[in-house]
Image (tube, rainbow, N blue to C red; front, side, top):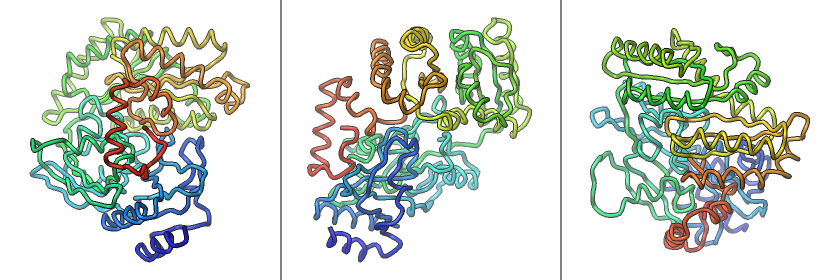
Length: 467
């Protein structure tokens, strides 16, 4: 491999290649479940340099693990322990190439941190609505490679719906210049959608053109307490009826999830007394602040009258609204502090969610008394993070090793019976690869493998992930 590394160093220069030393930031995943050993870390600063890296990898038959902010939850961007895989980090590619206000679009490189893309749009008087807890460190390329969702999918859609065009480097080092601000282009297969959500197995996204939106004139946020999960579904229906497209976010949190935050992060203020379910809802209106407030007040009043809501707290200013969202977004952090847990990023028809939760809560408490179900997520688009923690006093790592397979089987069987998906927004990576082989439609799997062979016949791009 010395000839390969020497060629890489010659092309990328000293800042562009890390060999030896402490590479833990690139070799360990965010959850600390996967620990790898990289041959080296390539850090290209341009699309041309990414293409050069891929040409050398193709020539020397070196496998590549593309990596953005390394915030993934399914082990999709962590090298294996062979010491023969090259990590290709895109974090030096962080330029905003263009903002076209008239076209309501922005073009940015894949290594741009999501929060920086949001800030660039805001600086131009526009909104880039993709938002998730890791936005301070995750990158645009990773968001697209996993088709990230986040908290505003209900109104604006996933990363796929926000993307207009891509620039991609292929397994052989060719560059597809598919950057475009067009909303209509029927000139053949939609290659953009092929690469979005492919988790770096088909090509390396180096830049993207994304949609922008007007900044809302008013944004209203509230926490609402509900006695039953059916009440949260009723509240969602009422919010859709009253607010329509102004409904931006609708998150649910069960009692155990907020209790965990109280234990692990006691400095965070929780404005409502503990309830079986707490809803975080947000409305935004790009036209009239007065109209938005009227809709919001009417919605909550009707929810109280119908018994769907028993208590509520309305954010009085932007700081309070941020605090409400921070409470919701701190649940994964509280889980990380509590130790390893079994994560389920599932999606179901909204109508099926109460039945699923009732069945699984009972099944898991029977399977292991004292087990903790940390259930929260984006009810508005049917995406739950149905996570399972060890009973008090049981070592998290031992619990995971002994019970993950059995618990996954129960949860995924129940999801499948209801027409749901085992991965809503986190992807497949290494964590769910075998599960996908068992549960995905065989014809779909065969088509996916055909596409992989056509675009990456040597299996150099993120091998062992997804397919």
